Amino acid sequence: MVSLDKDTRHVSVGHLSLFLYPWPQLQQDAREGDLFVCHLVREAKPLIDPDNYLAKLQSAFRFRSSYQSEIDRAVDFGMYLARFGDELNSTLLTKRALWCIRTILIARSAERRDPVFAPQRLAEETGSAAARELLTNRHIHHERAAVQRRLRSFLKEEAHPSRFLETADRDIFREMFDATSNRVALQTLRQDENSRY
Image (cartoon, rainbow, N blue to C red; front, side, top):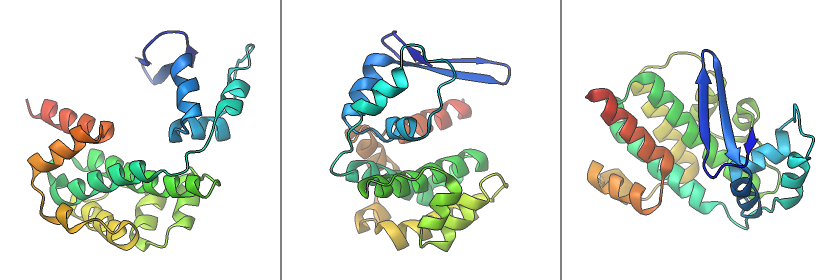
């Protein structure tokens, strides 16, 4: 839902999960080519929109010339998961590994100005059999070691992570996540820390 609040809010009641996004932030993100807003302007269907917010968002959206920063954040987090993800529960590890794979593939499709979001279509886009396996069987339980192996394989085949990421310790990854404002990585680390205590 679009709101006029200043902050994004999440409301959850039973099986209902609702996010309320502030309109000024959505407009700014559209002008900056944000991938989430790109998904909205390409695939959202308004249920009730008397003020034509979706049409306004669509007209405000501009692609970035490059989505390399999104790719870099996903590669950094993916390498962290491939190396240290065995500490996460398998469900969370799988979700975050898929986030890394999808972010890289979506960003590349956005750079071609033909954004793809559906997991099945992304599976068709990748040359990595490991990524296809995770994308097409995302609702099936995977062992942690298998997820880590497939994620590492995808990253090596399609993203070519730096050798530095192969040797960096957890603290260096944490510093990188802070420095690059890698929200998904930082949120996952906090979530993991909170679940331990």
